[in-house]
Image 1 (cartoon, rainbow, N blue to C red):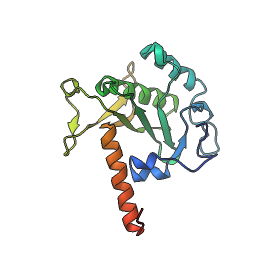
Image 2: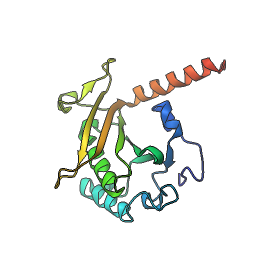
Image 3: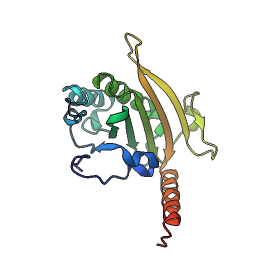
Length: 190
């Protein structure tokens, strides 16, 4: 909590994908407007935090001060948006939240962030309400999709969003699988 890549190199985002180990990160309780961009200024416009809070307030009065966990890879212009949902909260109802977050962050980064990876993780999913463009993973657990992010007025394309909808148990199994591979390669028996 309260730390970013400049203050701590430790994070667990690599549990989703080992490539994310090299992503710079920011804790969800830090201001997005404070993120530097290659020593030439800030990554986002100064009003990004107030814009995000307004979006949350519009989406849900009860959770207006909450924000997704975001990790940003400055050099390649990618961002990871991770949403953990409480038990019983239906995941399919929050897919559009990821699009809204990605659209806002893309717009407020002035073209610096163009590729987004969104993860919705929870325990409840009504598969009959999943958007038709989403495909099931071969394991039949969870879904994925890729789509463009564009300005709603001008239709200007900001970037692209890849989404995975995962069950918490599936997330844990993936993480344990990755850890097992690392332990085997390092000959560690724990």
